[in-house]
Amino acid sequence: MFDSLDDQIKQDAKEASSPRERILVWISVGVISILVFGGLYYGVVVLQG
Image (cartoon, rainbow, N blue to C red; front, top):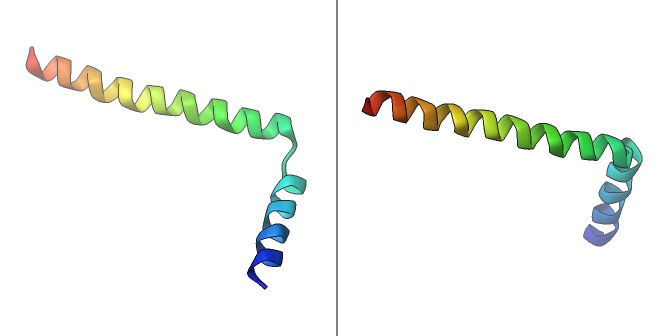
């Protein structure tokens, strides 16, 4: 039961997004992560004076 459900979820995920969409999502995640951690780093540097 669980194997077939897992297979169905994987198949649905593949059909829901194209490879290009998945690449754009990963690029977006990377850019947002860099901005967030860069902002945190900048904040720490500014606070240390």
